[in-house]
Every structure is written in structure tokens, then in C-alpha cells.
Image (cartoon, rainbow, N blue to C red; front, side, top):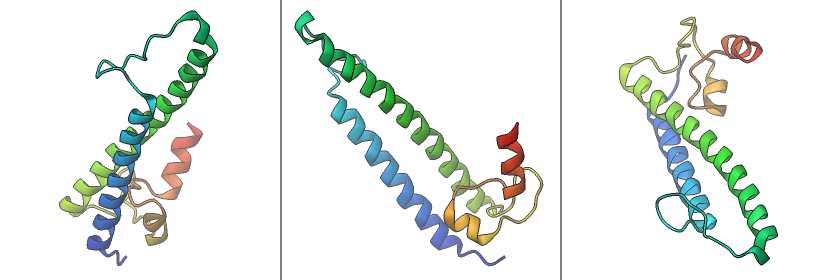
Length: 120
């Protein structure tokens, strides 16, 4: 396999930057009172607004968790580049096709092992 590691590293770093910026934007849009993560307090007249904000926050929390997982996978992929094991399936040792790495640059599993994992 011929994978341009410098290109893949640049792609991973760019994706990492976009995810971090998106996460920061979500936190800013939530309008958190402080670093405690608590929502602002509202009077009873604004209960519907509070419910809507709470729902939005739950959605945003889920998105943030997903982003954090992808950021961990990106860090792992960068470590694999440094270790010389990037592009090799961590489960079976098979070569991960270049097309898969271009689509999912942080992929750690070949398609077969990823399907097995998803099936349980």
C-alpha cells in the first residue's frame, strides 16, 4: 500500500481542529453560566424555553461525546503514524485499503473487522 503519511497526518490534524472548533462553538451557543456546566436559572414563566434548551443541550452533549470519541481515534491514528503501524488493522494485522483511509483517516480496523464489531 502506498499511503502518503504526511498527507494523512495533515488530514487528521485538520479534522481534529475542525472538531475542536465545533465543540467550542456548541459550548458557546449553550450559554453556560460558568465552567460548572450548569444552565442559567429561569423563572416559571420560561419553563417551555427551559425544556427546549434542556433538549438542545442533551442533543449537543451526545454530539460532543461523539466528537470526543473521534478525537481519541484521531490521536490514536496519529500515534500509529509515528509508530509506523498506520494503515494496518489493529485486530487482524491486514492492510487497510487506501480508499478506506481516505474516507475515514482515523480508521483502525479493516472493513471486515469493523463489520464484525458492529454486528457484536
